[in-house]
Picture 1 (tube, rainbow, N blue to C red):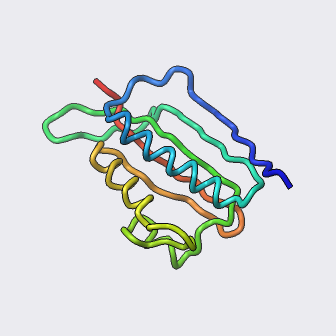
Picture 2: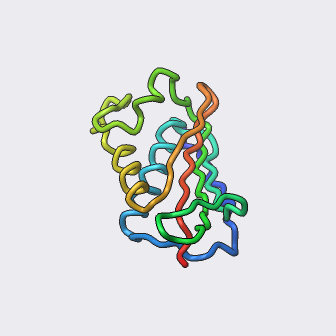
Length: 138
């Protein structure tokens, strides 16, 4: 049977520019999309949402307050087992038969380097949502 994965894009049309390295951030999002795709094993919906965080401001060192955008990548896959959750951003941790276990670790470090946050919400058997926040350019 042909894979029937639908990609749903819920993009905020008025997002401001962010500060960051385009190639490295592309690497992060491609990795998260690929993981979501693989977790669904051929069927489901992958939803990519972008939005401006209107209420969260974080003070950087010696700077004013910063605004953030969120990018969320949600799959309807198998979800992540509770015992694996603690390790998913650790280097060399993988639940795949063929995988280096570096994908999410690299994502974590790239987002951290950019002053952002990456986190996951998951439900076994229902899917996972990876949420990435990045700082808006001044």
